[in-house]
Amino acid sequence: MPESQPQPPHSSSGQSGPSGQTDTATLLLCGARLTDGRTVDVRLGGGRIEAVGTTGSLSAHGARVDVSGYLLLPAPAEPHAHGDTALTAEGDGPLSYDAEEVQRRATEAALLQLGHGATALRSHVRVGDVQGLDALAAVLQARRSLRGLAELTTVAMPRVLTGVAGADGLAMLRDAVKMGASVVGGCPDADPDPTGYVEAVLELASEHGCPVDLHTDAADPARLGRLAAMAGGLRPGVTLGPCGGLGRLPAEVASRAADQLAAAGVTVVCLPQGGCGAVDRRGTAPVRLLRAAGVRVAAGSGALRDVANPVGRGDPLEAAYLLASRHGLRPEDAYDAVSSVARAALGLPEVRVEAGFPAELLAVRGDGLAGALSLAYSRIVVHRGRVVARTSAVREYCNSAATGLDLPRQGRGEPS
Image (cartoon, rainbow, N blue to C red; front, side):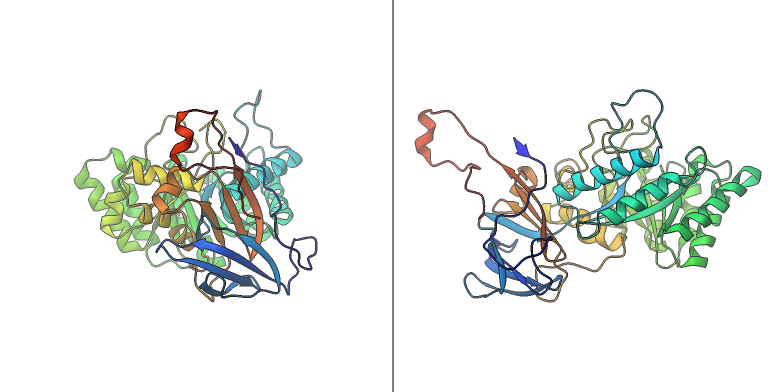
C-alpha cells in the first residue's frame, strides 16, 4: 500500500531553485497538529523554525504545504545503521566490497531511511581486513552525495586492535579518522583482549576529540563494568549497543550493570527490530530496567535487509512502535528514544516544534502519537527547512454496507 519512493512536495508556487525552495524563501506548514492537541501553522526559514502560530495567523514569502490531518513531530534520527552491508540479504556468494557497489548500497539505504523520517544517520563501517579503507571511502562518498537531503556520519570499525595482529588495525583506525570518519568504534567482544581493545579506542578518541560507539552484546557483566569504568568522563561521549545480552542476565546482575552505565554517562542504543552482526545473538536490551537506572536509551534499526536481518526495514517509527508494544513504554517515551535521545547520542542539537529550533521535522498522518506509531503510512520529511521526502498511502475498499458509516480512512486527499 505505501508508495515508498521519496517524491517532490506538491506546494503552491514560489521562486525556487533545484532544491525546491530558495535559500531566502520561507516554507509554511499549514494546519499541522501537535502532540498537545493544538492545530497550528509553522513557518520555516534559514534551516530553522521561525514561528509557530494559530492556523491562518502566519504569512510566508515562499511555498506552502497543507499538512492538515498530519501530526508534526521532531524528525527521528538513526543512531545505528550499517550502510556498507545493507541490502545484501539476497545476494549470491561472498559480500562484495566493490567501492561503487558499497556506495550504491549506502546511498540507497540512507534514502530508504530518510523516506521513513530519519534526517540524520550514523553508519558503522568495517575497516581493515579485505576491504581496507575502501568501504569507508565509498560510504564517505555516499555522504557527500546525500548532502542537503540527510546528515550521514560514519563510525570506523576495525576487527582487532591488540597484539601483533592489532597493530595494523590501529594504524587503519588512525587513517580512517584522517579520512573523515567522525566516530571511532568497533566490537571489543571479537578481540582476544576486549579490555585492551576498549583502551585503544578510548585513547585514540581522546586524542582526536571523537565520540566512541562500540558494539557489544554486554553478556559479560564484569567486562561491561570495566568498560563503563574506563568510559566514564570521556567527552564527547560513549555509546554502546545493542547490549542484548543484558536482557539474558539475572535481573539483579543486570540492574548493577545498568547502575554502572548510568554512573559513567554511557548511552545505550537498543535494536528492537532485530540485531546486527551475528545472527545467533538475539534479544533486545532491557529497556525499562536501563531507563529506571537513569541510562539514556536510544533505539536504532540495525541491519537493513542483510544476513543479520533479511527483513529489516530501517524504520525508526517501527522501532518506537516495538518499544511501546513489546517493552511497555509510553508512546511519548518510545518516540523520544528514536528522536530526541537518538539525536543527542549523535551529538545533534535538540529539536522542538517551537520557534528557534532546527527545522528537522516529520509529519505523519494521524491525530495522535499512539495512532501514528500504529499506522504511520503517509509521511512528509523536512530537513533544514525543506521537504526532502514524501511517502503517500492510499487505502480503498470495494462498496459495502459499511460505506455509509463515515469510518476513518486514508484516501487520496493528500496535502496540496
